[in-house]
Length: 56
Image (cartoon, rainbow, N blue to C red; front, top):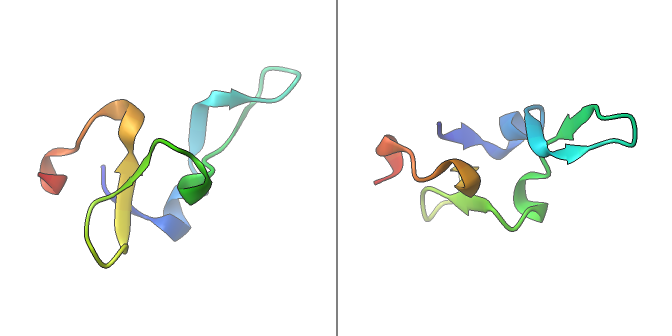
């Protein structure tokens, strides 16, 4: 799923957990798995889930 950076930071990341096992929010561009889908850097996706069809 392609999302804007401003929307992605409100999504949960299954790999980031607090000390009491609650999920934390996506770190977006601070995460090494974040991938930009276009050269304008308007939309991107989490690279852990693979490349979305719309980004190919």
